[in-house]
Amino acid sequence: MSRLTNEQLTDWALPYSTRNKGDCAGVTKLLLDVGFGNYVGDPPTERRKKAVRIPLREKTSHTSVLLRWAHTGEEVIVDATIQQFGGERRVFVGSYDEWVACLKALTHVDHVEPVDADYGFMYDVLDTLDTLDKDDLRRSTGGTSSEAHRAETLNKKGCCNCTLL
Image 1 (cartoon, one colour):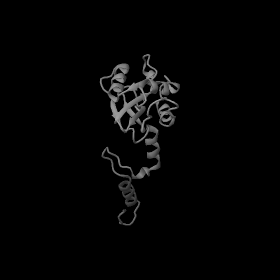
Image 2 (spheres, helix red, strand yellow):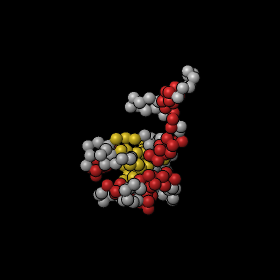
Image 3 (tube, one colour):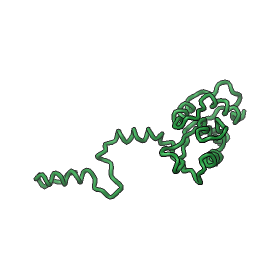
Image 4 (spheres, one colour):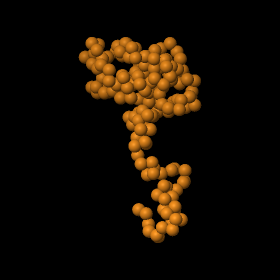
């Protein structure tokens, strides 16, 4: 049997389609889990989120679903929130390169930056940073680390000449 057709994938994603800006993360999460119903054809063997950043337009990434069929190696992007950028198409189904070209045309930009969506959505990144000990994070701006700052503060308060590890 062959993979689900682009028409079937469009029909599958259409109920979740929205033109509201910022809905791409929620819709993508839904499409990662929703079943394929009674469509004739092989469902994908893998689903994962795929993200890009559109420079000068968005502060965060735009996401969609990447479907992959292991037996053929075929990959298809399904973007049910493409209409937020304009145009008539409510659901995009096609290759990654076609998706990027469509986003460039709709947003009138020269390039779209790929984002490693396997790490997680932007909110996942922020949640991860919140769980880390912020004192353990280093600044890349050349500033001193929090440990060095604490050691300097202790030395100013007349602490013994011990070394903080």
